[in-house]
Length: 341
Image (cartoon, rainbow, N blue to C red):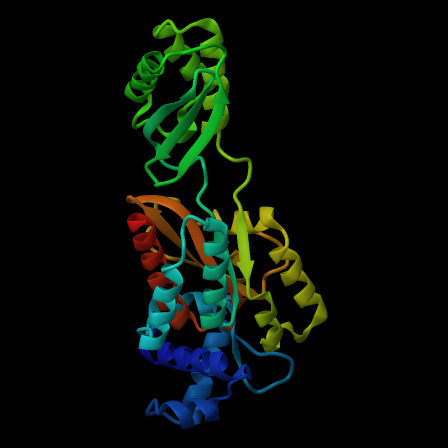
């Protein structure tokens, strides 16, 4: 795209994001001092309209950005302003919460994101199936019960008290623990199958009853959850956006925010290994009913591995640069907090 067209498109998008009103050539000439006349700007706007970067709503003389225009802006023109000191303080304060109560922590994180962006927020709690087996401990509680603790490389700990099939000495339990750690440490959580465990237990000639008990335990403990737990916040912020004064549009947004399976689909659009953000605009959304929305999603990590995702859902007239800066900061701080705690 020619430089002057970029300048005109950038001006239209900035003005429309700020005011939610169609932008005319005179407004661009007056506010943005591009060094050319309104007539020249009108010609550039005509070309941008023809190329699909801006649209003319109804019979208005002004233009608004299209999804294609927003995509070009995000990929080529967007600036990322740094967070203000008070915003950084709010992020750090939210990240200092108690991670042992992960559900409450994630709800507070969503509330903080919504306060700072004025958009709806979405977060996915760490999935059981992610990461690899870091360690396994079998701790005898008495002759007939043991506590099993499994630590994943993502920092997620799972534990369960099991009933043993008969009296088993601490020495026997320790031997089973060493065998399992030797065979399973480093294995991907998703790859630890019933068949693998069966082969392992037979190899070490465990008693049949004990083998069956261990298989049942580990198969349940290591099996990925059937669905990711999703948290949302700030849905009412959408009421303040001019785009969603239309009741039908608003119903679509609220229906989406209540459908965990659709929200999970939105979050999973992000490459599990990516450290950068993903910005999805309008019709790029993989679910119905949100063509007037954009979403910014970032992954957070524990020990270098993806643990989950956080995102914001707002109008396509989103303040992309500020939102990206904020989500980058939050994802980085969340990864750091989880690494430390």
